[in-house]
Amino acid sequence: MTSETEIRAKSKPATPVTPAAKTSSPQPQMHSHSPAGPTAFPAPQQIGFFLLPDFALMSYASAIEPLRAANLLAGRPVYNILNYSVSGGHIASSSGTAVPTTPLAQAPTNLHSLFVCAGGHPSQWQAPGMLPALRKLARWGVRMGGISSGAYVLAAAGLLGQRQFTIHWEHAPALIEAFPDLEPQRARFVMDGDRITCGGGVAPLDMMHAMIAENLGSDFATRVSDWFLHTQVGTSTGSQRASLAERYNLHHPGLLRVLEKMETTIEDPKSREEMARFARLSTRQLDRLFDQHLGKSFLETYRQVRLDHAHRLLTQSALTISEIAFATGFSNSSHFSRSYKATYGITPSMARGD
Image (tube, rainbow, N blue to C red; front, side, top):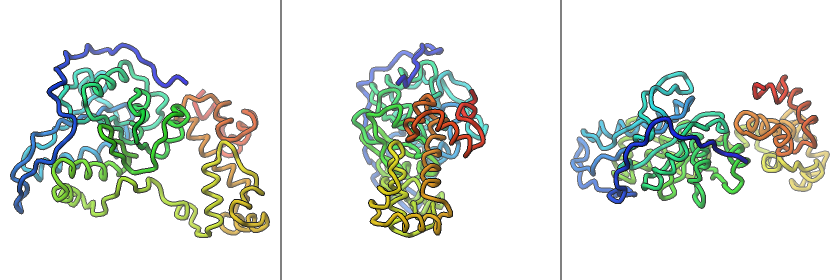
């Protein structure tokens, strides 16, 4: 499947500086601190944010604000925040707030890290010159990051092979379909050497806590988190979503096992009898549990799980409607279209704006 469109960049690339002088990994160098704050810091790190149109504003703010607070608490710049886009100019966020940017081609080789910040519709992220520019920075030793759906862009640039990474749970299905060799982790954030990714939302707060601790020590990172009342710092392995028990407001172990199995067998749906055996229940018990706890039948619930998955693929992937029907366990596109319209009131083609 075509995952990228590479066109020559509109802006002429800046003359590269010899990358040999760049250090690729941060080293904690804070020597001492007083109640007023640390008294010795390493040289400021250049942290870049590559913004795509309609980028997730909350995720972006959750990433840059800890860096700003670190500068404030340190009493001097310890992080320089730089904003980039493909061609420069103001880039509108998901809420319409515009951020001024510099063309990515002008990014210096002494960038420590570059985070790709993106929102919805990953299959449409095909800006001129974007992927070659990202690959060039990676070759120079820049630490490459993805925020919210930014990992999809890194995958399209071929920068996530043999790496552990994560992506916002809503965009995981589109990434897996587009790049079947890659498997995102179910984690809030993942730091794997010179790749660092998070699921978006408020997860960047946790990721930046870890990144600041890596550079300036855990005590200073805790002071930054306290500044934002971020007293419950999440771990890298923390979940991105509420548990099934919380989402469905139920606690029956057998029913939870079936619901979890539904979410992992979307492409190859299991029969009611197979699911009952899997949960060590009779089919009559299974039917009673669905009716009692969810107010829906087994088949209605399973169909909704598959249609929700199909909806995400329709809005976020370049798969054809027939391919989406197959990927969500429908026998053909006609059956899929009828089921989709009965649930959402519009056809799959209308959902895509065709």
